Image (cartoon, rainbow, N blue to C red):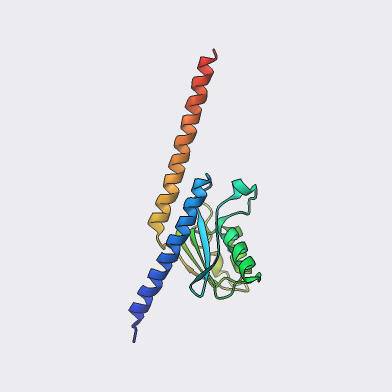
Length: 178
């Protein structure tokens, strides 16, 4: 007989496993010079959808990791609803993604790092707790938050350094043309 502690520990380990898979997708986004956010949709311990941030690559402001994963999952199960599924995403969802999560009827959202500027699970509001919603989502935040945060911080640090180098090169070329 398993205890409640054993069951909780099993859930935490499972969440960490799937979050690590989402983080791999976030690395794929970074490789395309997109903000490193990855997401997967899991149903019955099987990945049914996955995606990563690609609004720049796709020229689509809605191409967030969550939206990409939800689209992929819906296509794979041939249904616009994803009941009993869990969405794992490396960054707290924004309002657009939260709305899509509700409409897809996802049961649970597990995210890594918080998004202080636009996160709506806890940072700017608790969207999923609003009583007017016709579907309620379980939310678990902070799973592998430190690793997800480091992944994002390293990306933005690299981008700032890249911009600085480009600015220095442009300045140097300007002086050579004089």
